[in-house]
Image (cartoon, rainbow, N blue to C red; front, top):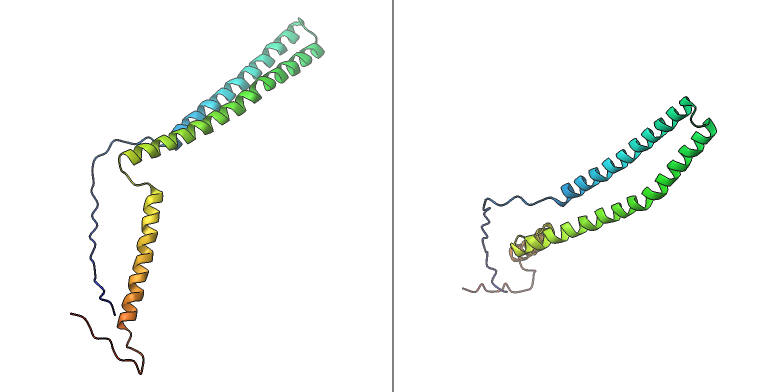
Length: 155
């Protein structure tokens, strides 16, 4: 039988002041709010355009059917203009988010700070090793089977 050594591991947490690390989700949230502000501004300009056309109708400068046609035409033009831009902005936000996460991960790696994935992998390995140590201890504590000579302990 092999000798099993117990090893004691002491872990301590070191609190060091560190520079605040920008959160990628905060950056994405700011960009999302900017996009929503743009969409809001677009909706507001549509409302104001309709209001302007309705005032023209009230003054009699254009006919009601022409006003509705003009509103529909303006809305359709705005829709055609904004849909590709909106999808392009969403793609850009996604790309920027991925770049920020990648750069942040690279930055943390350069500072030799483990990622959550690294910590999770190490935790899984420690749990596996702890289980294996428990198995070996139980095997060592279990009396030998009948008919077999007990192994001599090495000193």
